[in-house]
Length: 295
Image 1 (cartoon, rainbow, N blue to C red):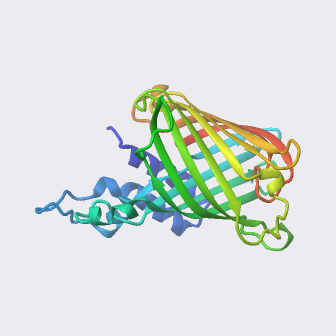
Image 2: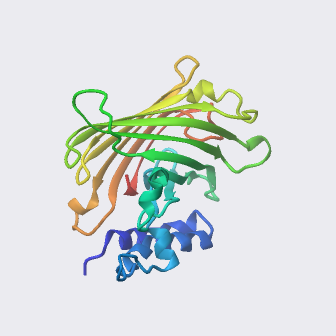
Image 3: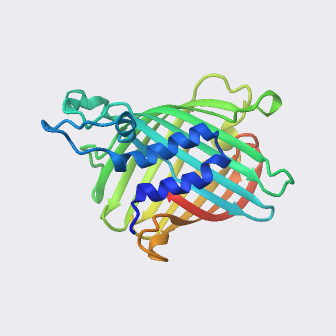
């Protein structure tokens, strides 16, 4: 029997989420992932009669890549969950009257580093990143020949590791993020994205973080939706050679095994400063391999 992508993802979260988030939150995400498949058809007159969970799920999307990765020397794991929610329900008939607000989203990303070498298998650190942003896709502007699409995003983001005392880390940024696409968007294409930010508010828990993270990162991606994808992130701090690079390679598992296996084989290399917020001033190099449900 063929399984839909949403049901496959729900099965993945059923297995993994309880290990990382409270059970109530895990159950909520599972319901969200499955709700869209159970939305009733539109009633007469063009307006859908939807259950509340279906109404919510239609405006909930994957955001940043979501994966679980494993590395050795020493044994460690990295886990990321990321979702965004659109405030304006675009399925409503009168949504066009509020079209400027269709790009307003709430986003949430959680990245955890897992110390699997220790006897109790504790989390080394977790970054919690809620944000509010505006996203405009395919804006009517082309800065040069060969550019096939331009997206623009701007927002404010909080990041903290949820710890107290000397281990506490937190920061706030305001950012802009233009993205340029080159090539056939239905095939292999290239994407350049620059996230440029300024720090807002108190940095007393990590007063020199700009020396290691700087004020921007550059993402360069190449690939296709149904094949290989190569993604890279480059970040430069303000002090000396401080900075970091992250390289990700993904490939659809469905092309390796059977068609309805809707996950990705995922390899990741991180080298440099600031993989964790707790140890933002420590340099490290780690390679991990695992599975992704969104890339």
